[in-house]
Amino acid sequence: MRLKIDHVGKQYRRDFWGLRHFTLELGPGVVGLLGPNGAGKSTLMRILATITRATEGRVTWNGTDIARQPDELRQVLGYLPQDFGIYPHLTGQEFLEYMAAIKGLDARTARRRIEELLVVVNLAEAAKRPLGGYSGGMKQRVGIAQALLNDPQLLIVDEPTVGLDPAERVRFRNLLSDLAGERIVILSTHIVSDVEATASEIVLINKGCQVEHATPDRLLARFDGQVWQWVIPEDQLTGLKQTHIVSGTVRHSDGIQVRMVSPTAPAAEAHAVAPNLEDAYLALVSHNGGGR
Image 1: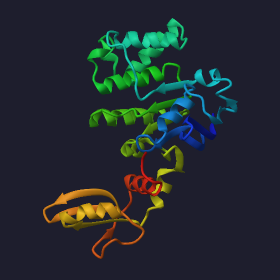
Image 2: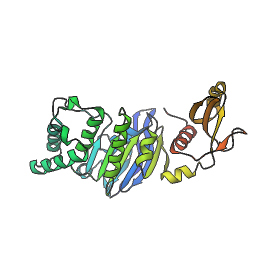
Image 3: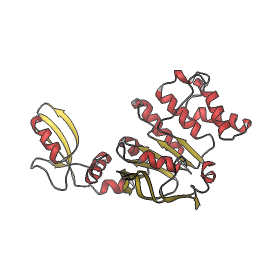
Image 4: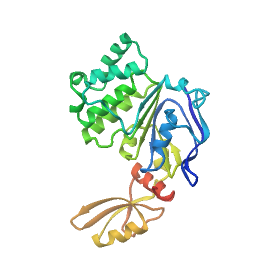
């Protein structure tokens, strides 16, 4: 299975493109689409989900243009949008039965699939409870269950962990990793740790344009020897942030320990440390002009 995005752009006004010249080809695995809020991630996700049509370029699924023949992709698509709506008075079971009917599953297949998915997302014991009483993490798990009803080959999840507590976020990441297998999973987020924990490939997007496409290891290798750490007086921090890429700070009794991305040592007492994905992300976004 192959998803190919070829010079895709989306124009909203004469002077504003939400997405421009975006090109990417994907196979099975988890792909992290990482970028600041307003970078164009949701625009791309809606185009891939056949909800929005691109202004220019085209997207093909196994060679078929999804704008001309959207049903070819829709039959094998699972989608969890950023603003996932529920019916609070329906139980989890009833909601999934409703969604299965919309997706065209016959009653027997739907029953079997719903039973399986309630176990997968750890909601079997809560299946008869109204959705209005579910926690944020439980609602997200219902969302992923409805996206998986048709056993999709392409699974798209847009900002799935926003608002979740740390434990729910970890459970959700583990679930996405388990689901990868022989399908393409696209995780769109601005939360670096979500991508770091799940993705085999990372696509960085900013201001509607693709900035980088690489494996995590290759991305980190680019910044080897360019991340520094040392302690500074607290009153120097504001000035340092204005002139350098500061990727982390920790308060100590003798000052502020800063973590910085720089091609050369920023101070005599600075020592090199291993880069992480947060360092790489901030450096690339800063080089590309920051968020919208």
